[in-house]
Length: 240
Image (cartoon, rainbow, N blue to C red; front, side):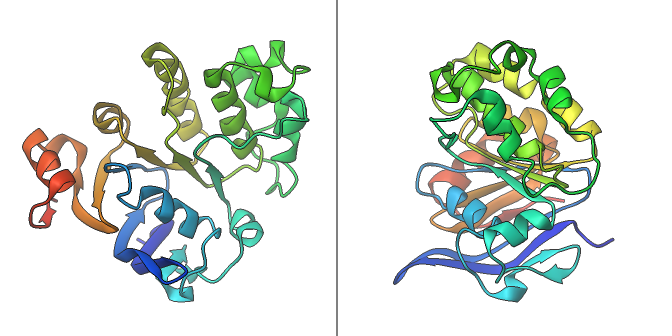
């Protein structure tokens, strides 16, 4: 079966500095995968490449088998791939609702995710809809960022470090929304430093170190020792 998204030997550069070295991942339709790794492992760079923020070779990224690696970010969004960026990146001059509506600018068809759908997913945003988005708590801002991405009706949602800096109870509330997001038909890629959280929500996990995949397999098959070795340096592992 053709993967919804696949990278093949993906490389990425910041000027002369190479940040990714031949990364291979795949995401099936309806699947949730997690990308884990320490700071500087290349996780955010991978998300930036997939979302079109960083240019790559055309055939290094495939969406439904078609090369999209050379496309710009707006064209990637039009292919049904939306990103919740690290740090949320909300528009401070706009209200919560205006930030959400911006996500519908390049909307794909009549899917699940309308304003009403987002407000049902995160009821607190309905209460704060007229507030400046950046006046909200960190957790509520993260809900706005997720809602904004959902407003495009994505087939693939990229979530980059959505739990970073948030209290555990807030992280729990945010992750509680993921079953409904999956039920809408969206596949999800989660970038996480919280290994326990990643293993709970993802069917498969990829571990990165220094721009390379050092471990991958099904969540229930990975041991803490294997993950520790993949974080800090050991030979490449693969589990099926």
